[in-house]
Image 1 (cartoon, rainbow, N blue to C red):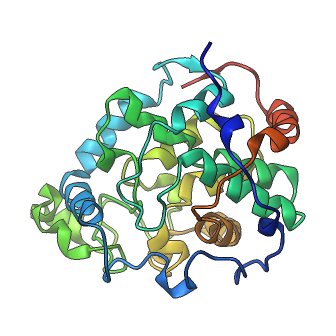
Image 2 (image 1 turned 120 degrees about the vertical axis):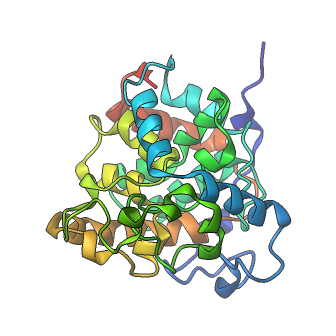
Image 3 (image 1 turned 90 degrees about the vertical axis):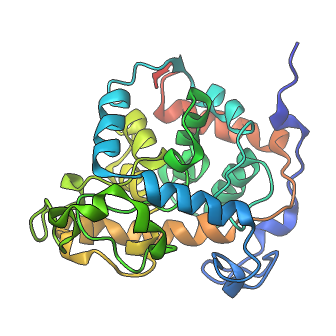
Length: 284
């Protein structure tokens, strides 16, 4: 029988002693997180070169047509979680440990600070959309920061110069500030670069509070929630929801560590939590 990888990990008590937004037990200084200029692995630069070259409006529309029907397979949250450890995120300069370790670390940080159960659950599942890689999708179509397509690229996006070979750069209509959109149309009407955020949102949106769904959909949209870009596309709903993404980002980003996790001790709580919100079989 295949051994469940989750029960092989060890979770340290020190993870419960930290201050949100300025954690006390980080593996490195805060300013070294998301540092894309100094000592960046070559795999990260190559990833973003491919991502920015191939994430066109036509590509995004084709991916939505392919994946919105949720007809790839049926599996539970836990089955998806098990598959997550087969994935190495080539875009992340901060994460070396297994994807499930990061999932539990994020959730436990939220739990330790007394956040609501739906937000703790969001921390646990927020990266499950990365199973797209197991469906044959290249990394540049799954992970990394997300950004709007169909309008001009902001210079707040990571490596904005890498868009030079993107086919949409040759379409003047797609390189104006608003492009194919209207001012303050709302992000729901904006096509984001395709990846695990949008995909998982489509899988879980019917089961979660709107705040949780919004976090999942835009947690990789760093140009907006970290750099303040694209506010001219946001409507009132986005302005109301974006603080939740910013709050979540502190836990998603600063929980990253090489420390192991003892999931055998945590599983009873999380099994109950997952069962509270999700059926045992979901369409992916």
